[in-house]
Image 1: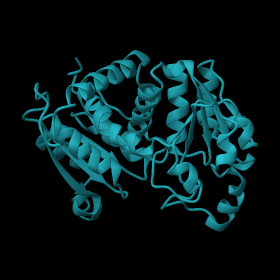
Image 2: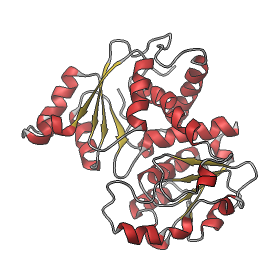
Image 3: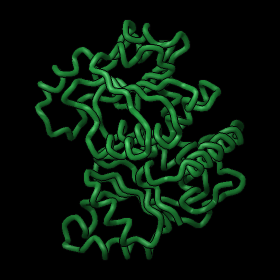
Image 4: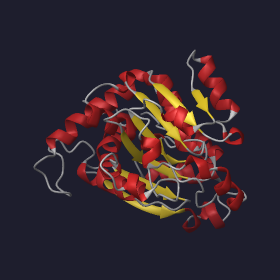
Length: 309
């Protein structure tokens, strides 16, 4: 049994094993319809419990498909439907019940501590579907998409992030350390990655290049990532934040400083941080990126159950 909570805690060789397995499984599904089950049915008889404390579209749908294609069963619950939310049951007791009824647990939450506490009390694997400091499933899937399109290891590419320094970027930074790729970040001075993230990077003898000028960050990039500047539950002065990021919009002008065959990726939902011309243009691969969540998450599940081939 293994957990999948933060990229920084997963050995590099295991990240590579997950990506390799996902590539094989996607290839094997070319002639199968959406709900046809993988031939080996690796999660047959397994029940996966998903709990969402925050809204979700792609994560919820893609994991539903991932579990179904692996022949597993799933149930989705809301936090306020449990006694943990309103009935006074302790987290430890809830974890015991989840471990009794289910074979795996997945949590999307606004609390890093809650994921940590669940991991200490569960006797089944836990997968982080999103937390304030981490979005590991999204980012590992993004690496898969980059390598699929570019047909080379991400370690041979220049990766750029333009925009807010959020949980997705935290996981991308961790992945850059694990898989050893160049990462430039373009963001306003007051929105740089948190100290605990950069301290961990330095501890692992890697470097992230941070620029206040977005065009300097994007110069010669093979891939440009972005994300919504103001998220749904952002507890900040939203008007001020939008103003602070007005010069960090992904436009055709910015993409011109990247390499000729560069691509644009966005984990969605989108806001005003990217122009229509880029988002719907030839360099954008956002729909392929979204679909690949299914394939990579299947292999993340199998990693947790020690079933990677």
